[in-house]
Image (cartoon, rainbow, N blue to C red):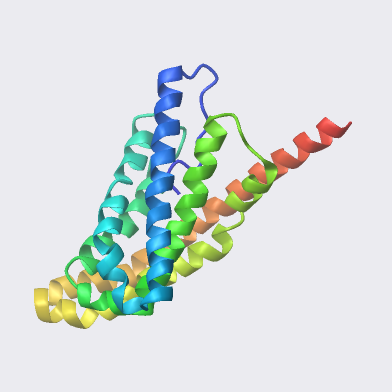
Length: 222
């Protein structure tokens, strides 16, 4: 949920605004590529081939999301750095601590469901932010932005946990019990707590944003 409360400041400079539009537009394209490759590969060849066509691309696309945390941390956007870091950290564990060392696990349909949830979430989020910063904010897109997470977040989180579960055995054999204990801690403690925080934050954002949009529409019709 990095950049969740992104709003250009009242006196935001054209350079800053232009940079954020470009960043969100590029991120939209990158995640749309992940989405297209994931869906297309599943249709044409099956989940066994998704890592071959998409694994490296999603690895670096996801790594780029550190910029969301830096934007929040240094005040480029008005977002909570902790919330941004929580989502990015969970994704980093999934790609760098599970996908990267255990590519054989990525033939599971769980890997495909994880990439599908991630990529569709980010296409909607980054696309919405790019349009909003450009002064375009149709209500339908706003509603989708603040409602799609109700399905996509649980799918993504459960898929991340599923991949971690699959990695427990190989982790013990390849890296030892300490690495296995780390994945267990993520699976049993950190992920459930993080999911509660992230979904709770989005629920608050949804109520706030949709209420404000509804009030604005009522005023506009009076």
